[in-house]
Image (cartoon, rainbow, N blue to C red):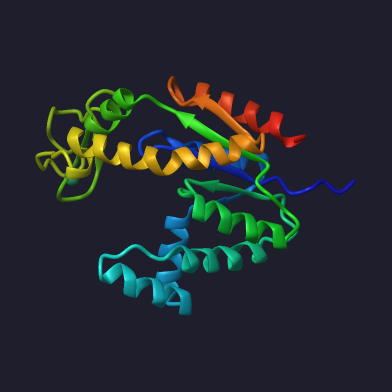
Length: 223
Ligand SMILES: [Zn+2]
């Protein structure tokens, strides 16, 4: 029996835990994990034609255009032809990207089968990111609540005083969340309209969240 590919989109705000969950999902369902940030870095590191084009935007501090990222995705999807499918980790982020992805999948006779949205309250995200402490010297990351350093405020690895990165400051986090939600709302409506959206709670232990995620994906498989 030939089973159809399964393509899953995992959506969630920064700090919702989608990276960890998406990787585990890919492993559990034998799917290919696709994170466009990783894809970009790989292409840039390889010095491919697309990577060089992307690097020029990045060096200027500009966003890499959707079309360019989509071309990288095409290469990746074609190299995965015949595979069980993909977990798209944090992509698409906008309606325009969703339409690009639809086109790419359609060429392979595929579509987004399930879009899972990890729901985490703003306050929980602020607490998760706001509790992060980063070592400015070696880059080690700690968390005051879930992964405290042995000695408060000091890096376990090199003993340097830990700092709160600008990106993790509450005002910046709330700003990023507002931007994320304004871009994502139309995306949620798009997938809801097709009957493929599953909203699940991203709060609780990683085990609990994964249980909900796996169930949502199994339920969406027959769609
Ligand atoms: Zn350190």
